[in-house]
Picture (cartoon, helix red, strand yellow):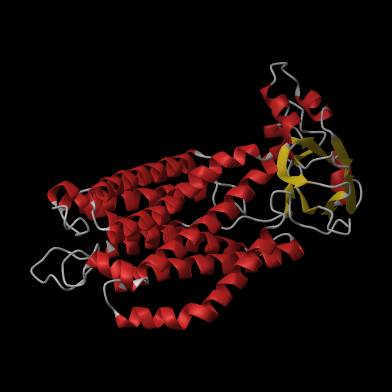
Length: 440
């Protein structure tokens, strides 16, 4: 299992996608791309307030004027109706239905978006006089380099905020999260390090759990650095954003490894064990094979989800097939764990051991089910709030789950009693002739 974790993390490093750009967009307006797609898609943004601003700068004014270059802004709902409609609109008719239009005949253009009462996503398209022409003549002219800024009003009503409506508040959240991690580290780091150095029945569990916690803290810190830069220039540090997601994925793999190691002997081979020793780890080919399959499957789905996700700040997306499969996998793991623990609890006579199992089940089920649960709860919120609710909620719930597990494994009176110290009842202990030595 240790080699399996390293393999999964190595695959994540090798296959990691490049960081997405923020809402200061740089590129080129292309007549060929606009003609092929009946309008070149430039980007989208969730505007809010009454003084949102689209600012675009171009250098080659003569080419833009000669091409009759324009930007077209569509509200997301209207664009969806236009695409799904069966009216068979022509190219020019589709462009004419844009809610806002900007003619580019100056070096810098500012367009104020007077927003409706609640935030909405707007899509920006480029088109010129060649876009709706059937022939290819003169349609491959010189591209027009541009820089575009999409801005929302700040607290004072000035259009200086680079965050869209769906991203607002994330910078402050990660700042508070990093601050909490720092305060907790100052208070508990020394005592935790001493507990790990002492060894004992909870030694390996604490090492793996602490590694997962450090990865989560690293993810929060990298996100804070990215968002701090993003708030100033609308681009941020894409590498730090990708690094934050990598740390998050590595933490997920680490926790899955820990929980599988603790639970595999209970759920897979419990029928072969006597009820007096339900926690014994059995490294059989069947249990090892299932653990390998689950960890590899989650690793592949996490990577797949990141490659398909185009949102620059989507850490817990569930809008694609990979995200849905991840939710299904977590539900299945939670159900399997719950069923296994239920059977153990129903026959366990010791109140102390029963309390241990129930507390452990709470921590594990919270870890596995927080994402599916929040994904369902998010549908009661507006579209622009859903991803933010899931992202913040998952981070908080998984942090609570880690606190529950830490309290459980650092409690000598509880975990030491369950492991019985002198017998082979520790979850991470392999059945062998040397029954007093814990192993991975």
